[in-house]
Length: 250
Image (cartoon, rainbow, N blue to C red; front, side):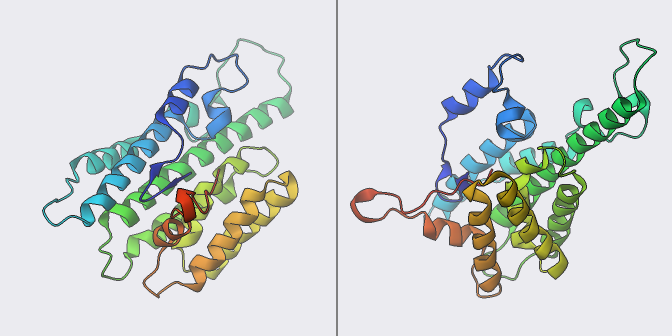
């Protein structure tokens, strides 16, 4: 997880090591991150840009150049990958030449590919949501209407990914960002139920942590606070330079 002012918490070497894992290794990039590799790369760049953006806002003679951010945004909007494409027919599966394939296996393979699509799209819209909130929103004005739409799209893709597979578990960050930005009570409840269900399923504390953070963000909605300011406040260094909290949301 990254905060707005701190950038990426994990070092770049960790991301590089994941990148060079062999396909046969259990710690393949997708298994570890749950995010398509290209989108993960965009996310780490956005985290770096966000830190520089926040630093620039504290300086009198510095203006943040948004060109790289807009370039990443366009790349995310245009991003498509065959492995994560929408599964519209059996032809979308690779044909190995076998004639005697169990129909249930085919159906499961189709559904799994569709889960991959929804998982990737949830990440994609979450990153677009992040860009709108962190880089485009005027902190002195009200929230942008597009935030609610992007939040809905992200959460819709999360809910469309089956809980019967472990893929949906990887979408905590997408759920958190979407949940923070929606004012729709049904979507908020969906985000909350996601956290509770996966907490019961996995016993990973990060899901309940995310649920508690969502409640805090919702309670402060309209007060001038937003998820970035709340997260950064909680991650400020405490006494003797130690960090008060680090949040893992995925």
